[in-house]
Length: 396
Image (cartoon, rainbow, N blue to C red; front, side, top):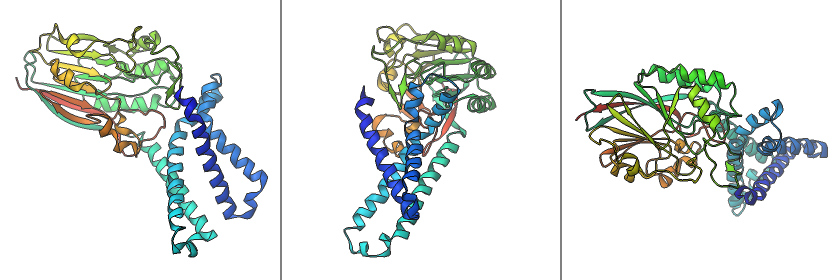
């Protein structure tokens, strides 16, 4: 519903950009102002601008899959293209009110040069963002838990989240992730949600993806909870179109996880080797239950032996104090992407108590990863794709 209200503004922004682009071309060469050339540029531009919508409404086939993959870059291109144009126009507006308006800065060659700089700058940022999003790094953390774990002195855990497997994230990215996980030689892998990108149908070669997950070498296995995108619902440019509230979890996603040896914990607790508890909490935004409910942290730990280490897996790093009060020692989360794209990266601290990294909350440590994959544009600017290798020591 929100998208329908914002769509006119989206069209206006794109109309503004294409008009300024045509004006720039005309400044380069007057013949670029011809009707045929302008029509071609406008057609190509609006094909790109409407690619997310075309991919949304057209039936699934090879062409729409190509359009959908193209659309995964478009919103990033729009963000940085519009930003560059806006900066240029604001500077020109300010200068136009000074004596500098009579200088060569307002000449036709200057307009061509400034437009080229803006275009190249935006293009460079987009290319960097697309490349950087594909480079998964390993972030190392050390945490001490003031409890005993039945004779075990340390645990090597790898935290992953936000793979968003679908039309954008496929085999190559997951294969790189698995290689990096195995190089850490983990005792356990924690998967903090958003396994899928709102659709099982968007998976390319699901059998091969499942085989990649099965190739993860770990003593205690891969344990996961669902995130807000592990729901089968239509999504367009970040907005969902589900008129009946939050839908329940999709049985096909569960079947994939079983095939991939991913153990799901959805408001469930398991005791690993009689040494430590794993508590998987349902997502607050999309819990995946028929009535939209989920258990509280205290309800999940009520019957546990809290002298043993308790590790929560919660997709969103919210209700940290409640989780700490319930006896958790570590809360593993993702969801934030650490902003994913500048300038969103500078406001994550306003939205989240712990947007990325470590945060001590009484006796509990919150660990938030910026995630492996992407949501929306297949770009990362100002943040990293990562797995977290967490060395846990038991000091009790």
